[in-house]
Image (tube, rainbow, N blue to C red; front, top):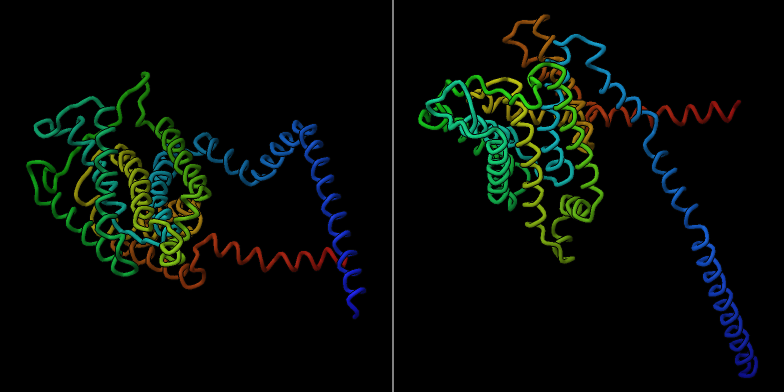
Length: 378
């Protein structure tokens, strides 16, 4: 190509680029003006998309949990419904740590037990020689604060480890607290624990009766669920998931991995503390057996049964666990109940490592191509 033709081609390309830039500038300017004129329509579409995202299944589930006490007996409302919500709330704290932070802590029931013991010690119980009889709201505030602080301490001891080492550290802390509560009589009242630890009668309502207690548990469970759903979509939640996937890369990008993990322990500790306060009100007592190593593992089983990668999985696993705990004893011996739990847990882990929700997702993905092929043939 000669120099004259090369210059002519370059000038033609430059003129075309200038025309394209001018057209794109004019188009962006006109779209901005249209966007300013159509701002009410955009906001309306955002609301419409929000309602579409809710889905019919969410409405059905919400209606079911609201109407559940009116369709079953008080026993089912209190024993199945309320207990599942409480255990689901405690397992939700483990889901946040393990599913989104990559930190499998077996001390979540310990944190819940610390909150329960604090309510019994500072509040009112059937052991007035030890309980301080503080106002119920002061005892709850201190219980949540102390349990959250203990969770932060547990996180400080374990965030620098990963995998089996984190599990061993948290199990050791849980076992240490169990033996402390079992052998200490001046503060924890030894193996007897604290009896008659009931919720207060506020607004002339007996909050331990099945219907009010169920709705109180439901409100707290929904608050914890929606909070975790929002948290995992925030920049903090996304960074926490990044530390789960590759902590070294997140550290090289300038993120403080230790601080994010400590914050996750603080949030999960607060959620577990709320569940611990509700659990001591549900049982009406707190004893060392409530925080033994068996219950540390049970919370892990609940979280894994439903699926640790889904916040709703904690409540689904709690429902399965409570149903087995309540009705499996009628079919087998009480001593062999843990065998049934272990068998169900082993089967779900083998067939679906992501729990029941993961199994449902796999079945749905297998059925969707078949349905699409049938619709195409028709």
